[in-house]
Image 1 (tube, rainbow, N blue to C red):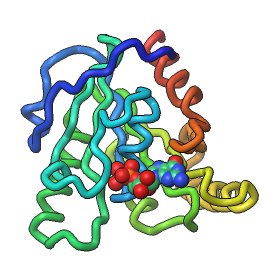
Image 2: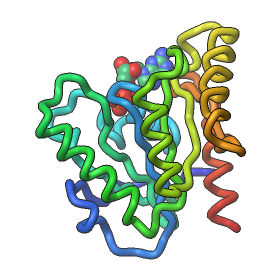
Image 3: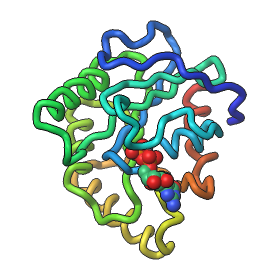
Amino acid sequence: MKIKSAEFVISNSRADLCPIHDMPEYAFIGRSNVGKSSLINCLVERKALAMTSSTPGKTLLINHFLINGDWYLVDLPGYGYAKRSKKEQEKLSKIISYYISQREQLTSLFVLIDSRLEPQRIDLEFIANLGEMGVPFGIIFTKADKVKRAQIKGNVERFLNRLREDWEELPPYFVTSSETGMGREDVLNYIEKINES
Ligand code: GDP
């Protein structure tokens, strides 16, 4: 898919205030620092469409971007940031689960996983919840340029094996690097295919 336009539409902290439209939405989520903002910027070939980490104020927001005038890319708040207060954590969980469970336009949620790490419980639990809610999702392994290919392969395989324990069929998954652009086309083509179907 060629990105012809990418524009910021709105940020808000309530899923019921998200824009009204009937276009498909593809949302991105993951632990803080997983590389979500970098990946979004890489996908749409903009340097700073999504603000990179530690920008004050953006953490609890749902950000909508209109891509090519025909689908929305949604940047959801990162989960699992240890320094958040319990109250903030609860607020965040509410925002995320409300969007994920209620948003009719949500066509696929991409869960970002750091390819440098062994499977993390917080990610596996998050994915298990998606299964219970019946939310369509894919997995994007990030930062693949940072470690040796064999290590990524091992981490990805271990993660998929953990999923196989609970799922008969694996979700679609992509191995990416925002640094090199690896996997970018695969993710965009996947989105394009669904949009055309
Ligand atoms: P977010 O909190 O999930 O939005 O994460 P960011 O996109 O802000 O990235 C967190 C850190 O990881 C930053 O220092 C990025 O430069 C770095 N980073 C993100 N993606 C990649 C990647 O694909 N390769 C490398 N080498 N670094 C990355």
